[in-house]
Length: 426
Ligand code: S3P
Figure (cartoon, rainbow, N blue to C red):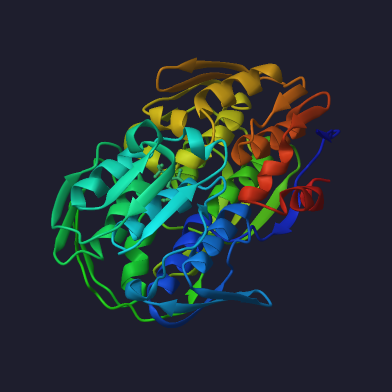
């Protein structure tokens, strides 16, 4: 149990949040399926991305750490080996789903499993289309739940409209499509994060987007190329909020990833009248910049529609932000929150209610009335890293201490979160 208590804190100074989780996972995967050695800088050494490294090592890929760099000795898709052990994806939905896409095209047998949370998350969104492409996959609940066994094979040409806006699903099908003899066409209901597409181009491959459809050819050779991972905007969001909701705050977040498919939180901060500015420091395929954020007088906003995939992981912290904003904030079209690391609609609403927030759940989101001075109390991360960090930031605006059960899970995406918080909370 972690206890946090602050007396009129302000958030000051400068921090560099750890590397982007989505890009870190993909840097290992694309490094592994390329020819040559890929060097990754800024890699997130959180539990989730370490699970990805572990799984690829089990398929014969040599991955070493040198100072702050990760070196991947690529073997190409054709060089991956049948793993002797079960591939353990830990708490990582991204590892599980993207790996299923890789395994679907491999001429061997493998078994994937993860932790208690992974065991509850729906995999049929990925396994059903992968089976249609030609892979043999089975598991609990008719191939919906881990442990899953995969016997990959020759994959067919495939045209598929995604039933949900999910970058994990899109990426799994792209990774399978890259191993097919023919073309794969994927139609997205809404644009989701495009790191996989950017990685393909970075490693010398081709993928075309026309409106909502994405076309990719199989059998493309990928050449190793170094990857620079920007800071994770989903991690930065906790500190953007911390500074905006506390008095006398002024914080600079360095080198934060600003890929436009991920910057919904910036749109929300603008909509809520937050006092912040963004300076672009690198304008390549995965842009990054510094964000200066100050104490803000916040107003309510409406979050829904196409914005949802651009801030899906930030909804827990946006809910906290809304408790400190004047008026009624409505979050809708976010049913996908129910199948994250926890049911994040229930978790956010019930845990924030315990601290004294005026928040209620709806079928596809939540409604928050603010501003409310939180009381503090006992709350539980429920094993979900983003709920844990949201509760820690809530302690900054609580009268009494906040006790957080199961705070260790924060290491999934932000192993140095509490060090960074104590560095900037004055
Ligand atoms: C991710 C996609 C999103 C996001 C997750 C990371 C990715 O999941 O919530 O944290 O790296 O592709 P969905 O694809 O389930 O929306």
